[in-house]
Amino acid sequence: MRISYIIPCYRSAETLKAVVDEIDDTMTAIAEHDYEVILVNDDSPDGTYDVIKTLCQEKSHLIGINLARNFGQHAALMAGFHKANGDIVVCLDDDGQTPAKEAGKLIKAIKDGADVAYAKYIHKQHSGLRNIGSKLNDLMTQVMLGKPKKLYISSYFAVKRFVAEEIQRYEGPYPYVIGLVLRTTKNIVNVDVSHHARLNGASGYTIGKLFALWLNGFTAFSIKPLRMATLVGAASAFAGFIYALYTIFRRIFIQPEGYVIGFAAIISAVLVIGGLILLMLGLVGEYIGRMYITMNNSPQYVVKETIIFEQKA
Image: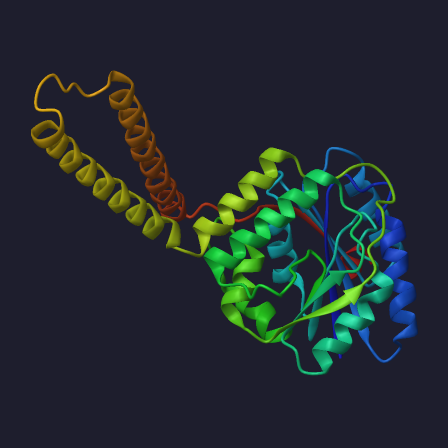
């Protein structure tokens, strides 16, 4: 059985070698498996790709992929999936927080019958901002993508070959691996693993990147936001109709003389309704814009260079 490891790399020049060494030590202990490690440089501004080239020159089981620009973590994962040929594919981070020494737990869960195994951290070591983003993302995947409430989603997971092949089939310009997994199978389990502090540096996720990931998640694989917009519009229209009836009733039966609708109430209603209309138009525009970009065949990623041991030889 062959195991493929995929590691999206960004600002990890100081940590990547330790992560690869930990994978090597882990797979030495699981001697019955052949394996490969695919390192995808997401146009990191530091010396990450130089480290990848050095590692690939030293180790025959490593494959280095250099993307032409920064496409994001999920696009980097897609590049790795298209290169991986293992019976089980394991995805993990480049910062040492996802312990490669516990990959055997994920592999065992797959061999025991699960289609997908996600690591569930006993004690998370992420920053406060990253934890808030994770909670929002978890709520979004529950509401929009139908994720079971008790299922914990993380960046450390393993999938069977057929799941990896189904992920590869997606050709849209906005990949969201979690959505691809959830629409492929429901046979998903959690495996308890430890979670380490970062070996070096800080997380590359900013508020903007977390928001973009969250927006991509609920617009790429669900039309529920559009249905929610319809419901909000219907509720606003119904509330306006009721208020109009109330105004007419009050004008005729309660204060026939001198009843004047308050200026503040009118402005508030206009601002609320106008804001809702603009919000819904923006949501529709987001969907239309994504359709336009998809029709133009915008790529998920662009590979600038690939390093394989046999090519150097």
